[in-house]
Length: 169
Length: 278
Image (cartoon, rainbow over all chains, first blue to last red; front, side, top):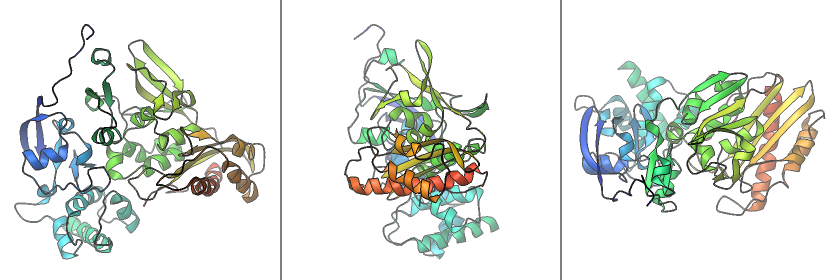
């Protein structure tokens, strides 16, 4: 090894991180290879964030990182050190379903529900700046979220309803 | 730091290509150096007749930047890359440094006067994009060098461009892509740049197609002739995205559409959403 070289760390070496999830800080010692979605599900017991494809395609693992939607299977947990993460559990308000969650229920914007947490977080980013999205804007906002059973029509209804709920809230 | 870590270290920018590659074990670096914690590497500035993008500027930042929108082709490209989630993470510098033959920036920027600014232990280097990308996944970057900025010269007055790619769904790489930048004097094309993606080991200029327009009146007939001339360019490989013949047909169709939009934009017309996926 050349002089001054940094040795290869053991793959199991632990790194200390503190990640704020839904407003609560989680201090953990984790391996550098741990994905953000694994951090949320396995070390925070927040299992609402789903692993669908694990290839950056399906968007079931979508969470907000500092307010922006990301696929948590394609972010290393150590990269989120110091970040604010919002998961589907964070869409609740005082233990009650939040406006987006209510809208998905009322408009029946789901069938099996596997993709729903990811869709709701993508919706959260969309509605944060635009509570009356056009169908084109909705289409673009959820293009990274695959649903294999609703056919999307009720998802569109749910998002439009959520926009009205958020605006009225 | 890269010098200390040695050859088995890799830089991590947006991670939207590298992390999937790590999962597939296509890459297994001993060290990852995360560039995301370095401040001041994400910006969009207009300076000396050019737009300058910090290497860590996210696709979504470019998509929503009115400054970047001054060159509509840049907006087309940024707004069409993958999906919202990936555009929120992926970076322009990372995309160019990866040099994926299906990448969007590597093709779109080839039609403009683009310089890649690099930084390493021996100082700074400025490399024209056409020289920066040497082969598939291979750039002129030395091991200890990184991309610091991407500089794009403002096209002259009377110039208009468009970037179009065809994808089977939002999150996937395009099956084929075409970028066009035309500089017009009335109905006559003074300068034409046409670039194709996904049909070779790197994005490439379609010089035969450009020659069909340069110095000529641009109309439906000459645009169709130029698009047809782009068919023979490159060497598309049959794969799960389609046969070689299918990809050549895509190139012709995308080229014709992009030319129509470029001509309108060269006249100063606003053409919104020229390239939006899904």
